[in-house]
Length: 226
Image (cartoon, rainbow, N blue to C red; front, side, top):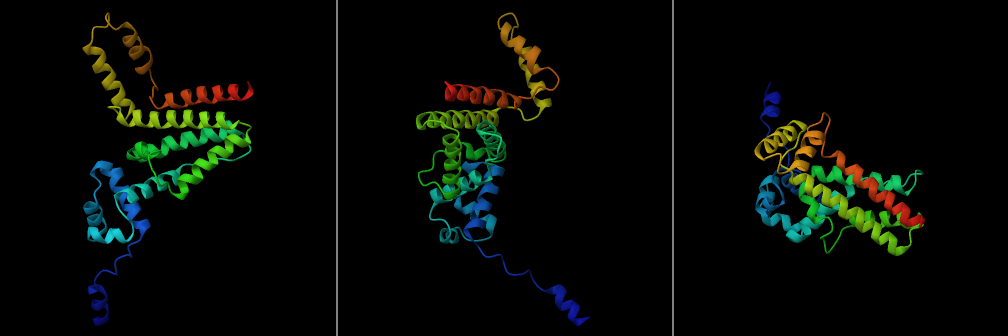
């Protein structure tokens, strides 16, 4: 009985050792929950149960923290190099990037803004360029393709995260509310789009992404073969 009581009364085990990986993971969790603007070293320290100054043993400063967080986001994007060809590989990469950014919307504006990109970021970019170059894209066209795909993917992710609705039900509710507020005769094409497209069963704004992506990929294929 004495031994059992002593075991039950024992305090919690030693706190997990603080590492750069733990710091970055906790920062991502906070940013996912509250946005990047709310992330401070003080709040991060509180989440980890340490003083903020302890964090500087693992990240040099806030910039280094953001660099590390962004590198982790890049590492989560699927890069395909299978036998299905460059279009399939880049399609999967862009779809995966949009999915990852939906989980980390704060990261969209950081993806191409880091002055000191990490290894996952560099590996990601190098793999995309390799896919294009090995498919026969001249260097200039590869650069154009990379820019077009990134601009579209990140831009769509940013727009999607800014929309005032998250679910199909919210989309319908908002569309009906807007439609009821403006004179249909003055904005006939907007009314037509709302009634005949947005309010139709199964509509999802997210489905627009792959339509636009296919246009870009088809255009790049034509440029490559031209």
